[in-house]
Image 1 (cartoon, rainbow, N blue to C red):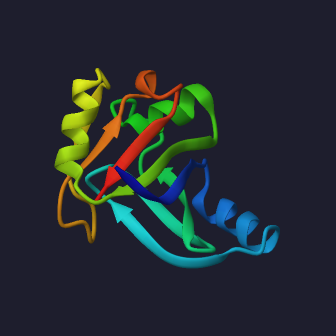
Image 2: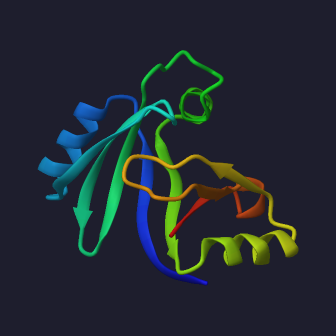
Length: 133
């Protein structure tokens, strides 16, 4: 069962410019940065109450084998994913699979002890949902 929202990921063309916009215009504060070499991205997490907004830029905008770069090239900037926390990711994956949800396993990122799972956007009204534990 989903216990809380972790963060919303927004795909951007220029991480530095996007960070400046969200900090200076909307008053959010930089919480921490990340480098998802496994995902081929660099990101900044901005504090938003008890949650975060993650700004995401592909390391290589030309690499169409990278889902982030491909989405940015075809659809432009915008919400990329919603990340949620669950108590038992294995049980959640089992339940979702039984319901016919298309899931994709992703390797752990910095600071994540376990792997992650994401729903294929076709299974969630065009939205990629990232499950974390």
